[in-house]
Structure formats: C-alpha cells, structure tokens
Image 1: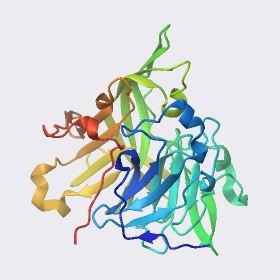
Image 2 (image 1 turned 180 degrees about the horizontal axis):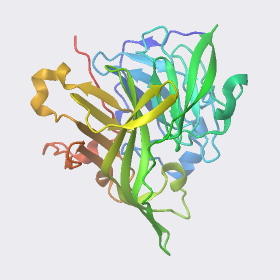
Image 3 (image 1 turned 60 degrees about the vertical axis):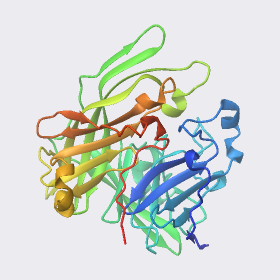
Length: 367
C-alpha cells in the first residue's frame, strides 16, 4: 500500500547521528539511527546487541529546500538478517531518479553484500534472494558495488572484471519483478593487481599494500558505464574481545590511503562486452567516494575551470580509526595524466574531524 512520503520540513535535531549513503542530483540519501555516535562510530556493545528495538530512518533529503522523502524504515522493514548484525546496515543506496518522480526506485547494498529494492511509497524493502524464478545464479553472490544505468541495476562482485550481474526491474501492481543477466566480459579483461603484500604478525596486526577495491560509475553525458579500481595501503588489528572487524573489517592502526586508480570503460561489441582501460577522461572530472561516484563535465562549469583539474579523479573516503578519527579521512586528487596525487588542503577554520558522516559528492540545484 502506498503512502504519502513527501515532507516539506527538515528536522534539525540529531544531525550528528546521521550518515549519508548516497545521492542523486540535488538529493542526499540519509540514515538516522541512535545506534551511531556523533563521530560516526557505533555506540557500546550492550546497545549494539539491542539495536533491533532502536528506531532507524532512511530518507531522501534536499538540504537546499529542506524537503524529505521517506523510505521504508525501522528494523521490521529491513530485508535480511546478516549473521553478524541484527541490522541491514547500508553501505550504499542508489536511485533510478529523483524521489519526486513517480517511477523512482532505489537499490541498497548492505555491509555483507546483499541487495534490496524499494520505492519511496513502499512500506517494505524487497530482498533480492533468489525467490524469483529467473533470479538465476545471483542467489549466492555477494556484491561490492551497484549502479543504476538506463533503468537497470548493475551489480559488481569482486570478479567484476570478468562479469557483472544486470537486473531489469519492473513493477507490477506494486510488486517488483526482475530478470537477471550475467554480463560476461570478453578477454583480454583487466586483472586486479596481483602484487598484494599481506603480513600477519604474531600480535594479530595485518598489513596490506596495493589492495585493489572496485566500484562502478556512470557518465550521464556520454551514457557510458565505468569500472574503477582503487589501490589501498593499510594496517589493522582484530580485537579478540569486541569484534569490530565483523562490522568494519578491522580496527585500523594505519587507516587506508589511496596511492592510485585504474579506470575502465564498458564497450559492447557483437561478440560481447569488454572492459577497455581509459587513460584520458577528456573534459570530464570523476568524483569518487564510498557512497557514490559522479562524472561532471568541465564544459558545464566553465566559470570555474580554474578550480578543477581536467583528467583527474577527486576522491573522498572516511575510514574508522578509533585511536585518531581525523586520520581516517583520505581526500585528494589523482591525475590520470602523470599518476600523481595531490592532497586537499582544508581551511584553517575547518577541522577534518568534524566530518562525522561519510563523504559524498553532491550536485546542488539552485533556483
């Protein structure tokens, strides 16, 4: 049953316990839960164990107008019960259009790699769990990133260089129906960096260098889909008493920092699709974060060309570092031209530690 989900007032309380998990045009996609500390970390373990009873809200927010559009919220609406947490913790949410569009649907990705669908007017999320006949092999896959492209949901696993899962989603009387395609890439395809240096010491500290993670990005101007490899160097320690690593992947001693990127474009041929490495983005600038990636053409911001570097990737990531939260913020500019990285310089009156929410790239629409 549909509901009226559009609100014109923006609640100003509890701003520090909110996190941003996505954006589309002038809208942010937010989560609000009392289980989060202001600095972005979870509250004590005793509260975490009881978080099924803690209110949680998911919603679109237009920070310019103050409008909000609610998504199905509270633990009872959430689709899966991962074995390490009673909450379906979103790492990313993507939308097919702005939430005021009647055909808008959203897809969420949880920390375990599960997918779920809903529309703003729905009361529940629909878990993609193989319950539909044509779901196929996606039943057992865990996904790393998602993107909606030409109305279809593209989902990438760790093996995204070899194949993508594509979900063609249609709603029939309010019920989502979808078909699944396994988009297999032609060879040669990009191979993740094999020079992974992993060291596990006697005290449980794990050091990784050149660890590559993947994400998807779409260019709405050229109508192309991209696969992004980003390298990470980090060290973390697993806590034998409080299992933070089950939530975040580890307690970072040295937070992840990015030394470089590789970018590939999806090209379709009669014999099949393939990934082709891109060395020049032209007049496009790529903005990358965990909550979403965006292409922006410098031709659309001609008055500000001097403020941006062409053929560059602007990146912003915030990683949990309990010893020193400010060290977890990794923000910079990577040049595809000379493979160099330039760090952002923050104004003196702005502390990096004040960024409680994960970074997200936002394209405001002024009127």
